[in-house]
Image 1 (cartoon, one colour):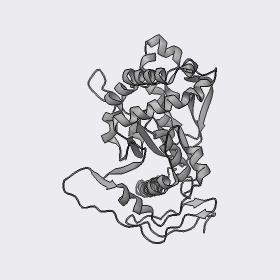
Image 2 (spheres, rainbow, N blue to C red; image 1 turned 90 degrees about the vertical axis):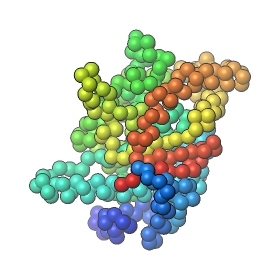
Image 3 (tube, rainbow, N blue to C red; image 1 turned 135 degrees about the vertical axis):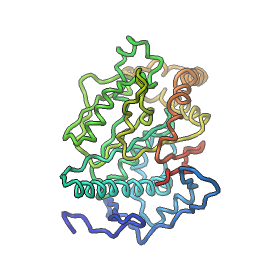
Image 4 (cartoon, rainbow, N blue to C red; image 1 turned 90 degrees about the horizontal axis):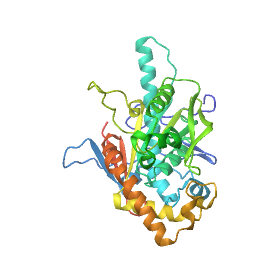
Length: 352
């Protein structure tokens, strides 16, 4: 043991130290290697497709790190996150991410040795993308909590790209209030600079803070990131490709700085239904606060609320999903597909 860390045997098939996740009650037990997934293929594809049962078996010998209070704290409005979902979906995913963190550290050490350099470790950056109301925020929060339980990543921070939206006054000036969430509504240069600074190893990087209550940037508040082991960046357009310049060349995209990327997927009809259900719940929740930007919706009848949410989806969120978010799905390293009940039924994993 060194500084409270346990020397671990090699992780199966990696040649790297095997992480042992730790909970408040002690380490998650993993006796021996997890079962190998069925890798038989009937066609060529850049992804390995794992059905829910196959994926869940990868965590058969790992202990559940959460209790029901954790589920209640992390679950988003209208989501059906459960202890079973955490055990069968997020435990294997956290293990896979831990393996990737170790692999990145191993590559850095090998590169330093080859180059005769001595560069320090920079944060491992994970991007989480997907539609409004698909559950990507819950996915990001669960992964943050779970990765903190692995001894190689005790410091995990989470940033949402909402903070990089232009302030409402600027959106109004640009005529973009009805396109909030579309790529052009973000200060992409500032977001790019933030992620580049994180990956450069800056000791402190600051990001704007967004309020879902006022639906605007908080002018005098910031989120400060202090060189974490892992930084999760969650947002609609985080996997967008680079923009093409006027001279035909392409610049950088935020995802160029990601070490791993996840896309949370579901059928568009299901996502729209989830959006409507969340809107209905918010009428008596956040919308009821007089300070809420959407307070005017709190007095709507059920029929009026359904019609309003459907209109907002059809004008803004639906088109943004089809035009800008969904086309980035194939850029992810891992795609989690949900059914109509919010349960993950399939994982597509890009081949190594």
